[in-house]
Image 1: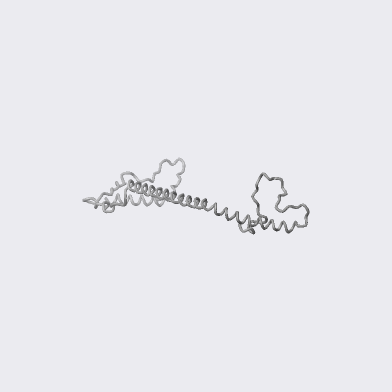
Image 2: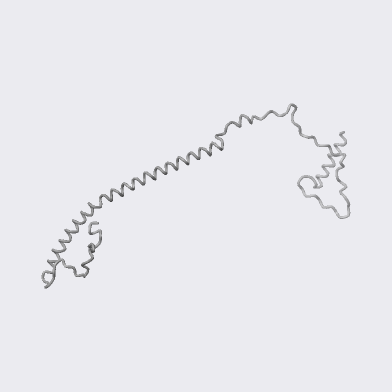
Amino acid sequence: GRSGVGKMSRAVMAWVARGRGGLSRPVARQMGTGGMGDHIPKHELRTPVQDMPPTGGYPELPWKSQNKSRGPSGLAIWGGMTLAMLFGFYRIGEGNLERNAAKREKREARMAMVPYLQAEDDVRYHASYLASLEEEARIMKGVKGWKVGESVYHNKDIWMPPTPVGHPRDQGF
């Protein structure tokens, strides 16, 4: 027994020493030398011992205790998200209806106020028209044939609303 092991150890050590073991690059042979004469004969190699489980087997892994419920199932998540989205769309629809009702109420309130605002504007226009007639009479009192309030334009069949002279900021608009 021991003599074979000793020979093998010396042969392996010689083989490694020549650079043929481990991760080193094999040494190139000279041409015409034939096969490698320094190899280890097969009868000197021992068969490898296979790693076997211990007698009685390995202990059981505690995977059942680690695999407890890890949350809802995929179907439950899909169902929950669908319900959440439906509720969100419902709330958006309600908000749109409320917003439209508020816009409608504001629009109707403005339409209800238009006659009063127009009446105020008419009173303001009439007062400024009388003031402009007075100013026109004062300025043009020395001109012969001038009629106060008569238009210099020939468009008596079309009424044009008066436009403010100057910037609207100065007119109080």
